[in-house]
Image (tube, rainbow, N blue to C red; front, top):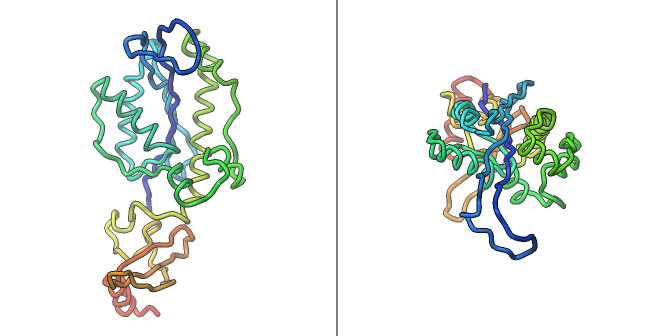
Length: 257
């Protein structure tokens, strides 16, 4: 079954403004901004594909073309996945699209791996680099820090831009690997079997009929729920009693024990 999951990451510029001195607890007013922050680059890949795609702002440091092209990709996805995506990446994209008058869907089916990390696990750090190292699936690329941003924004340094794009690409690769590890332990947001025209009792990840019932329990309201699992190893899911009966009838009809 084809799952259209899109993993992505963005890198952004900083605001450039006027201030009289540095220090803590100082107020910088919006009127002091000379140049608004924007999206420097975006990287993305489709689940299971090797190629990582990327776009960067144009020679005038405008992100309009980048956004127009990337939103078309975003709109093709069944699910979009980013680390801290709900709070950061998606809001950034929407704000910049609003600025340029580029249409976006009002809502996307998003999976935020940072939310999964915080709500389902107890890592020492919820940063994706730590989680990736903890799970032994890789790590983010090292870079020179703020100097790379300064070289891109103030000097339009092509080599620095290349390093940033490479850094962003690697973030997406690491993101997918972390998601693959976390995904079996988290609640599914899309039933791909139903989305592709299948039955509710099929595996929501791969659409397989090779499933088994693992546990039955009742809720406080007295409804019966069943935990199911699939041979693909990527799915443990819950179905109600009616769907469970539909599965039993399907098995009888197809002479499956």
